[in-house]
Image (cartoon, rainbow, N blue to C red; front, side, top):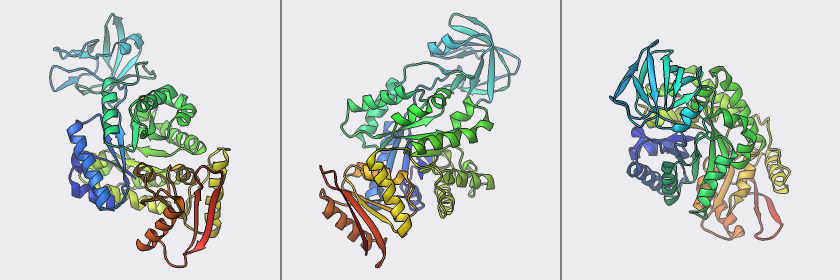
Length: 455
């Protein structure tokens, strides 16, 4: 489970409660706050990671090429249905009847008859006349707008350069602070994924893993190639619900999850999972069902956003999500297996099927994390214990299905595996007499060792 950090979860004790309640990844939204605030979050997570001996994923969410309003003449402006408003190519406006948008590509894409949507689609403006650097619109609904609100053209994607200067700065911050994952926003094609990966190659030899948020029409159209290019995907239901009719969302979610599962890539569900818990200590019945159904689709995890960043009950939200997830995973239904023909993947499936037949946990010692990613993709029914000396591997593992990461200090596989078994017994995660399956690959040899033994 992933929790978003924010004003409601800046206190160390709250973060500790969320970890105890089941959070294993923490998202920092780079669209809000500054590096000083983000550094405080990073320090808190890393401090608790060490004191609680629990590897934790740290996920930076890039803002992406999201087109926003410029600065309005006052804190908020009320738009009245039926009135005419000018949308102008400018950074600021000193007239409440003029709405600034500082992105030329936005105007290049507009034609008469287009519908401009602001914020969460609660406000719509119809283009009735277009001139150079200005369009005249009629308000189709009434509502309030504020500076820097997101703005889009209904049913259209706008071709703007993907990596903004802000994103590049935020990416460097993430690398400097050893973030395990980067979520990239408003992805359109695999080129956007590769753009971020190539940027990371220039600044680090151990880059964070890239999770592509599927939230644009173009991303849905190019879903297969985006999944193939990324290290995992996020079903970003918030923005998907702005560019597609809401009734399409269940079908889109199922499709995205299915494609990711077939490709053996991690997949996460985000947005409005337990949104009532922003103000309430318990979720609604429909929210409980939503989380349950999402888990049953075979996702690696769910991500709480406003519930833990600005809500009144951040720790309770994590606790409720964990309760629902645990109940859903009691009888897992794996309907989709990765369609990967590589020998190492077939071996991974064999290990998981053996675990199911023997009703045994799996113990893996890994230096690179490849074995754990493959094994997790086949959705083990029994615990998948992962030992590694590399924190980047353990933090990645922290938000993979079925994985329990444990830090073991050894660069030798045989020694590391024995230390991991001893540690599991010490932590009372393995009881005497438990039948286990342990495995590791010999370094630089095309040979894999499997051991079946009773502890």
